[in-house]
Image 1 (tube, one colour):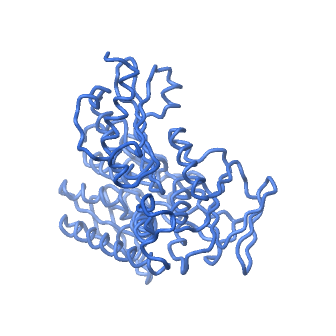
Image 2 (cartoon, one colour; image 1 turned 180 degrees about the vertical axis):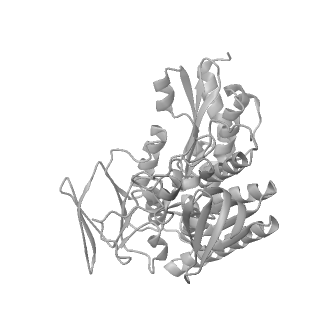
Image 3 (cartoon, one colour; image 1 turned 90 degrees about the vertical axis):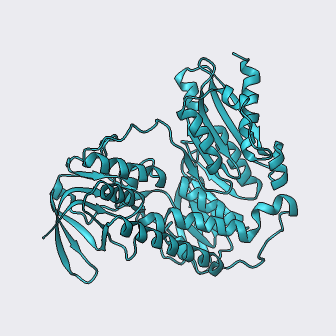
Length: 463
């Protein structure tokens, strides 16, 4: 029987970072992934594919240049599914190659198969060909990720009705599209296909989309979606779905019908834990297959077994999953990393992008903290003029008592890159005076921080 210090189940962001961190601490590590290639959900069906698809669509459609050349402008007139997939496969191959090299440099062993726990220190690894290997471990990390939630009443068929994994296998660009689910995944795919000039209807049962994002940002985002012709049905539950040779027919609870060429169901995900034999180690997942952990150490109820990444639920970001995996590995081997900062950024790679860090205006108001906001619209910056940007803005929220930055929120081009300035200032406890006193490169979109800072400062006074 093989014996190792750390068994990592899954090679996505959390598993990768935990494996490398454990190896750098001099521990023997084995990473097992049930797929045929390393990378996990993030590389093969999640983060990297959807962001690559987005970048390909924006490039080939000429989306970023339409501010100058008009809505009819395109870099490539007839964009096919093959055009989209070529860049996707090239990117995925590169990601896998980098990960394999990273494991090789750090002497991390890897293999493929399904892991099944026998007890808290023993597991069975079964390959596709049926070969079984027993491994004895000191510590283990469950980083198996998630799969799309597929309720039984949705007629998935990979022809007309798709989940968020299957949508990457499209053989043709649809004429029209309906997306069920106003969460991050649904919104991203809805706006990506809309950027291809596909008429898209977004259906969400709740009255809001992206309810963890500052409301003013979401309202502007919805306005931009509707302004370019997207249809948004909020507070609309689906009564029935019928597929036929000509497309998909949805009937909503309010009686309205939505007809489209294809349907994407993107209303939630569930943890990949069914085959792990969790009862053998005394762990019980919730109804969506998510595991409960100590939020500081990422230990499960079995103290030598950790879990990190999407399988533990919110926030389910690749960036936070990496840090969770690293912290779990450090704790497993008695290393105390410094406490993480309270705030981290969220990035939503829709068209346009949304990114946010710190408190929303609704959260600040609910706390009772006196505050002031500063706004900078990208169209009012010189860089915005150069880029042909007509929409998008930066919103900063400051405490009137301490003058500290409490939250930064962006909708528009480059939001996920720009947010890190706000993140740094919040985590370093910076104030409005930082933005007023510092000089930003000109012309840049980052200059919006100066504009928004001055906007708030002029109402707050010199202090």
